[in-house]
Amino acid sequence: MPSTDRCWICSDLPAPTGSDPGTQQGSSEGSIGAIAGSTIGKRDADIHHLATSGTPMGQHCGVSTRILTVEDDERIRTAVRLALEEEGWDVKETASGEAALEAFTRQPADVVLIDIMLPGIDGFEVCRNIRRLSDVPIVMVTARSDSHDVVAGLEAGADDYLRKPFDPKELSARIRALLRRVRTDDGPPTRIQIGQLEILPEEGVVRHAGDDAHLTRTEFRLLVELATADGRVLSREDLLEKVWGYDYFGDGRLVDVHVRRLRTKIEPDPANPRYVMTVRGMGYKLQA
Image (cartoon, rainbow, N blue to C red):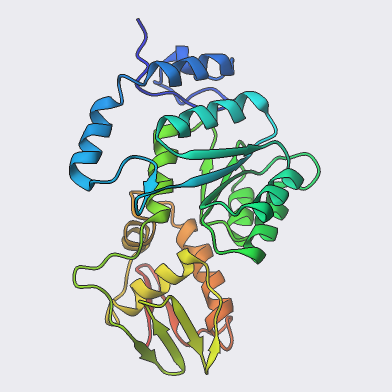
């Protein structure tokens, strides 16, 4: 009998080579069945999570996390909802960008999952509109192999992205990572002053020359990690682990795009940065 420990969500792309043919997305009904059939297989992982963290799956700070999904393909939308609900998340699904914006305005979500290819307003515009309203974590989903879509989604304000097909467990892990606060061994200082840049980690406040800089949660985590590194260079891999909270398989574009966005908000001249410096071949550092 084929294994159902892993399933891949996608309507029009095959699962990666080596995955179980029975879980490929030639038929999304197969994925939904695989998700339902994986309940017993994930029970041990849930027990381990409870034992080690004390927090139920799908809860953040003891409160059920609400996820808003935007996907026009009903089969994929259903598969994603089932997978996330299986992990304990509270899911609100929408089929268009317009419906997603209306739902978010009516009741803001804790995380937003946006498909790029949507009828009417596309995923990029949905992302930009939500970002104007909130710093909520946003994950973009794309079936395209073109890296332009990935960069465009991050530039629109997304915190992360996933390519179809994807493993629902990976999606859930990324959601938990995006909700996680900045973690350091001893906790960050209560105030960091570098030139005209003032950072208040405990308050989530950043000011430049006395003016508030409005950062997303991910941009703020990135800045705090650089600011608490005491001038050391942090590689892209270091920042992926510290800021996003998981092994991102070395995709440095995620870091590069967020550094560019961060510079536009805290640098007097983003083209000639004063604070966030690139160290060629090594990574980034915050210059005192």
